[in-house]
Amino acid sequence: MELKENEVACPKCGAVHHKDEHFCKTCGEKLDNDNENYELKPRFARKQLISTVIGFVLLLGIIIGSVSIANSLMKPVNFKDKYGEAYANVPYVEINNEGTLIRLISDPNSDYPSMNGNYDVETKAVLKQVLKELGFKDSTYEEITTSSSDELTTIFSDKYVIYWRNSDIHGLEVLILVR
Image 1 (tube, rainbow, N blue to C red):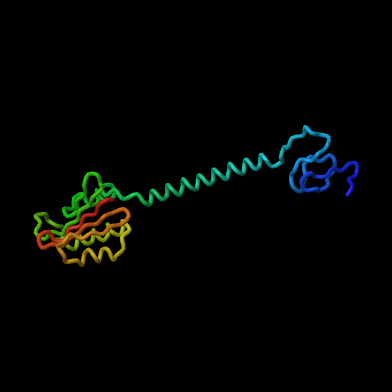
Image 2: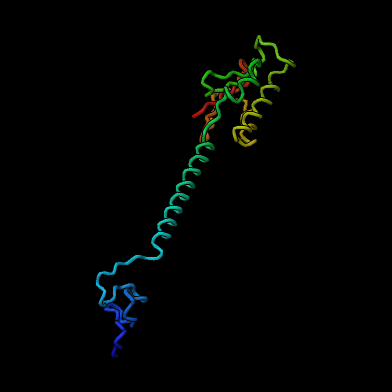
């Protein structure tokens, strides 16, 4: 195939182009023509750069947002902040100063006066509410409150450890600790 005077062939793929064209439209190869000093100035280089930067920023935002949400979901409750005021004057609920431990007791032999004289009912009501707010299933509450063993029993979750026992001396005693 012979080229016309105003045509040039791509040295890479052989596609025929007008002599004034500098790059092959088929493969992108630089064409051999009289203007050797011509440099590529892609039309879309700036748009590609802007798109890449925007995509990177969006991806970074999604990652940071996901990590932030995951951390807030995984962050354990500070018992003192959450329950300190509500149970400040309730004798069967004790919270340590760091807010990492809550102790619930239903001691029938305690010297503390109860509002209605029934520690067991009050303690179980508080326990049920606390377990539900911490994300435990009702079966956890049932397991704890129906146990008659005075042996220390343990349940682990990703954020908390629950120890409990039910003894004749102290009644139901439950410790919930932040892991």
